[in-house]
Length: 119
Image 1 (cartoon, rainbow, N blue to C red):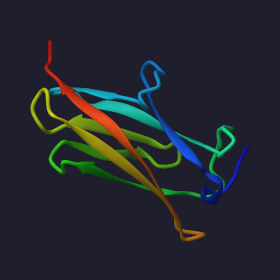
Image 2 (image 1 turned 180 degrees about the horizontal axis):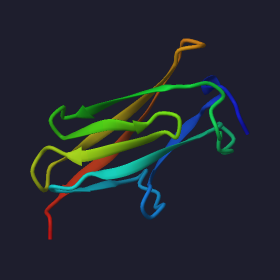
Image 3 (image 1 turned 90 degrees about the horizontal axis):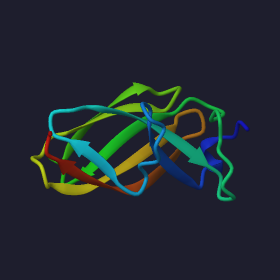
Image 4 (image 1 turned 120 degrees about the horizontal axis):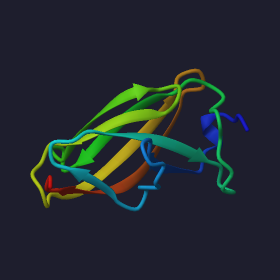
């Protein structure tokens, strides 16, 4: 069901590799980058696929040094996330979607992040 960003009520975050829902806890591993997928839902819980118009994706972290994120594919809502702080650091990620054609902006989160030591 294709809808504009204005109809979005919530967002969930999934790993691309295993399709696990990491919305409640994003476990990052020291020295590794993970590819994640954003899924956007209506207030009633129906997934919006695809969004009706192209969107920009931006990220903010608390603390700001916690991790880095880069958009991998804005059309598919994919991004790469890597820890920047040492193991046992924690904080949160807020994701903002902007729909330039309608000037709609929506922020989702915070999503909890914990950095784990590499095995």
